[in-house]
Length: 255
Image (cartoon, rainbow, N blue to C red; front, side, top):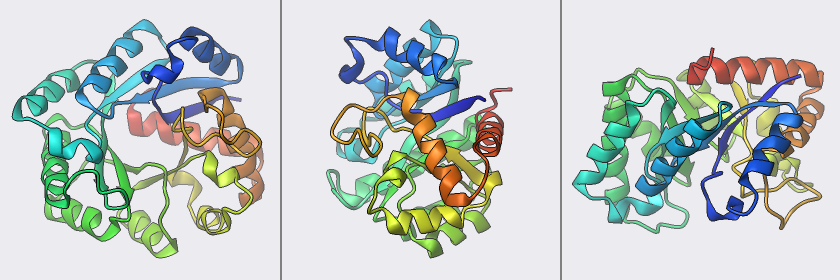
């Protein structure tokens, strides 16, 4: 049985002391591929370096909405150059975050639009961060007439937002917070998510699963998420692994 961690941040300093061992543990736990997601220009560069060091690691490049106030024109050019590399499989994570509002909403929207254009120009799928900003995210995607594939990372919306995303053909990714005992609403949304649109992620080093909360998350814990997803949906673990792996390989063009 093979799984794919579709979103983590192994470039973060949390992994500096034992990155090789983390990747090896993931491989031994049945994690076939890892998508290391860029969250800034520096992180995107590191993600690409890691993807070249490890055969089972791929990269995405982008700038998180928290950084929107700091983005310079030359940063877009630099990200576009990175996007041309073979092991870069998507643009992201990009989007809007109105929960923390670490950058102005207007700058977040402008930066988001620029990355949508980059996605279209390079025919790369889009990995979206969307928090408390559902209406604006969908409105901007509609206005920009995006034709490439979209993945809603770390899904946190309600059933209505899920339906709107599924109706648009988007993929939906859940993290280990689904395993939390009090994540009742998220579990109900997961039940409504079609298997042919579902992916799994750790978002490591964040959001360690139930039983490990407060500790560093890492890709090998994806199997704990898969087990809980199988339980919630009443589907065999092997079927969850098969469907989510096939979805990820198709989305990121891994096979």
